[in-house]
Image (tube, rainbow, N blue to C red; front, top):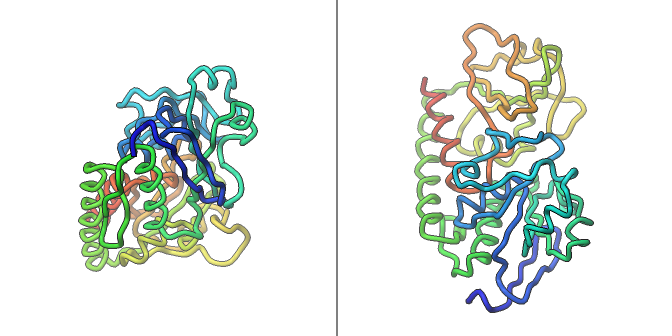
Length: 292
């Protein structure tokens, strides 16, 4: 396919999108933009979510800052005129419910006459399936034939993405080996201040469920309200007796408070860019923390 031929893609809402030619100017939600950058597609700009401020969150930035990709601020507060001046050919967001884009009001894209792609990052999909979908979108935007990216048949948009997928397979192997030898109990959480903490339900998070499949012993916070998180206090963390805490290091989260003596901790970004390169880094860092 050349850049002058038509482009089509069906997103994870089942919306069929098309254009007379392959889109060249991409604006994306930070998480999606960082993933596509890893996969060989550089956005002209990115925007944040309602959790984000006026500056790009370092925990969510991936390679965007180094690549010089401008940040436009939170998506719900975007200046439509400024966005229009960027002349985007396509906007890429994520979806958690399979119905609506997460960080941008779809009416903005409609008023600009720009197709909006929303890819699922919810717990209903396994992590490899999420990676496959971003790779497929990247392949369509680079107008290159997809390459197999892993033993599971994932697609990638470039040779570098193919190499990153091989790195992911290697990182998974290292983590699987370290987890088997460590046996450490791991708890993922997001701090909400000195009095409150959100404890992640592992099976609700694709990357945490994937870690469990690699043999990491993840702690479940137990019954209670909340599909993704159980909200409690820091005493509840101590009661679960973790050996290692994965703490949310996004800027809107607060650092871990009142961890029991001897409990190790390592950063976790619940919005890790859905790319093999990003998850390879995360898995290697976790393996190092488990081995410490």
